[in-house]
Picture 1 (cartoon, one colour):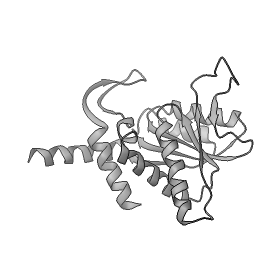
Picture 2 (cartoon, helix red, strand yellow):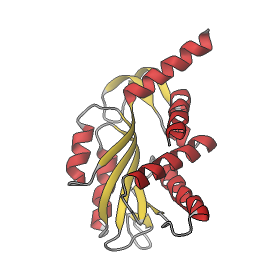
Picture 3 (spheres, helix red, strand yellow):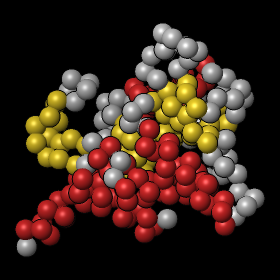
Length: 202
């Protein structure tokens, strides 16, 4: 997992981190911006994110039937984690598959009208995933939707925690005892970005 994690951090620092003057979705201003989708939708970045998250799920023995999150930040993470579980099962036939589901931001006005698309099973153990935690709003939204669908939250995973606006505390409160794990902090990503910049300038 260590090499995968290091390689993933490098890709996030290279493709997803920008210094400047930005207005966040919360309305706050920041001197940096992280768009993890440019990494999680990158062929190698997506593969690595799926592997690292899958390893984290196994390391902490979360044993979910599925992973899911709010569209669209969670979409590539969900797909790549599910694929990682399937590839792992090729060499370990007894390993359980981890399926995926996506949470709409609002209920459909047609068809079934549901918010949860994909895997949805009453009482199933599930892990919620997200790419960036700032206020925690999108993660909490997904937690609530999964619970309303009758699923049990056994863990929450986030790719990058900005460590501001009490986002982590808000997610932990919503998770109600389910563990919350983050792969990287914004401080780590910034440091890796600066190292890459200095390397390219020398």
